[in-house]
Image (cartoon, rainbow, N blue to C red; front, side):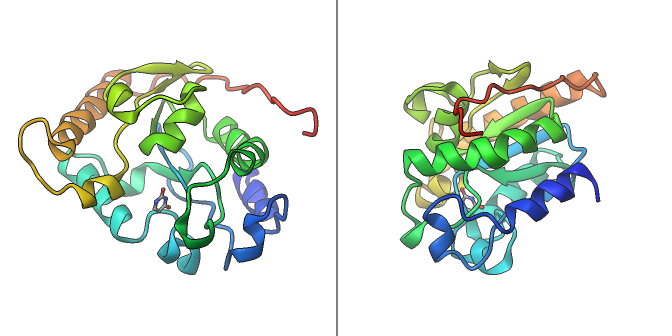
Amino acid sequence: MTPLEELKAKASACRACRLAEGRTQVVFSRGNPEARLMFVGEAPGADEDRQGLPFVGKAGQLLDRILEAAGIDPNDVYITNVVKCRPPGNRTPLPDEVKICTQLWLLPEIEIVRPLIIVPLGSVATQFFLGQKVPITRVRGQWFEWNGIKVFPMFHPAYLLRNPSRAPGSPKALTWKDIQEVKRVLDELGEKQRPEVKAARQDPLF
Ligand code: URA
């Protein structure tokens, strides 16, 4: 087994927080484990919980279409979530659930994949990487840095489904601009050396 497969196997038996009670299965990731570009969503929804893969429902299909439109192969990116189990009724994951799940699974996952670019989708993932609560409307489409990795927050595709207008300045129009910027920088970086990622563990428990 590869280190990523080992991590995924361990995660599949996780009962570290209350989300274990309501899930059908742990939803770990999909895509290319060697990808230079990683997308991080919030949490699995009902479709993902049923199929065991992230972003396979309506929001995921929209994400794939956005990638294809920008000339990015959806099979050549790595897609994961901040928390790996579906919160009951699709509620927002609670701060302790985010903390436990990211310490146990997301940080080691990023350390193994070592992407050049991480795109947090929506405010929960963005808050994790920026380390503070900020409106997504204020930070999307801007470059940040996290442990040597470029971070570029974008709107969550579920938000785009609720806001279908393509008018100038609309979330969809801004997202189209954003994904083209991601593609531009990805091409510019080429096969640049991967960062050695060692994210700080915050909790003495781990
Ligand atoms: N929304 C997310 O944030 N993640 C998924 O996997 C599906 C929908």
